[in-house]
Image 1 (cartoon, rainbow, N blue to C red):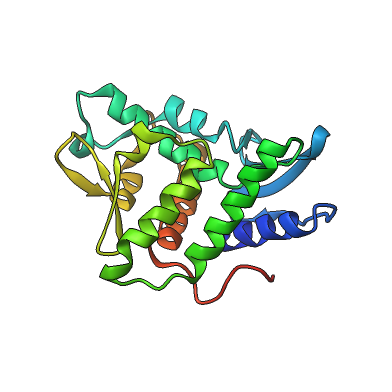
Image 2 (tube, one colour; image 1 turned 90 degrees about the vertical axis):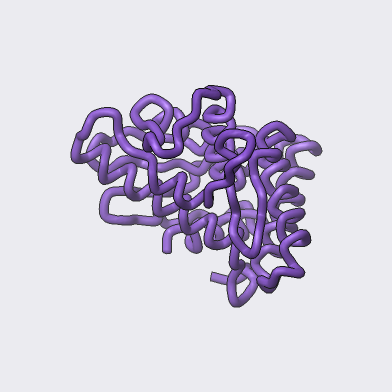
Length: 216
């Protein structure tokens, strides 16, 4: 469960920013934090075959340049498709840590609070509004704003995406529909790992976890 490992590392850095971390390894994917100047902790995804590294803020470049959404979910509104990719970008920016400035530190605090609450929250129809509020709060602090948030809806414990202004599709189904423009084995395996990360993240947003992610 790569998302759980990343989540634990986020909280480790949040509480102990001087720690050094071992890489998270999957078959075709390496994920790690790299510390740069000015107390920035960049989450990066490494394609083990191509050796190309994608930082949290550029991973979606890979998706935009090499993939599209299955025709069933396509829409003539290019802006709405852009919102979908901005949401994917926000999902990885949740784990980008920059505590160089007070504003950035505040965003990190807000994300940590939302992740903590989402991990503990029970799922029930009565809890949908509360959980949706924490999801929006988390994503807003990961640089997702009103026009993209308006495309998301949390109903009966499921996170949906508005594909055309009227129709809502489970966000996990949208993720699963992403495919390469041109089949290349190594890119396809990398894409599969990235999709699994997103699906695990959505599972967390929808269901939380049995215990708060404060210990490894």
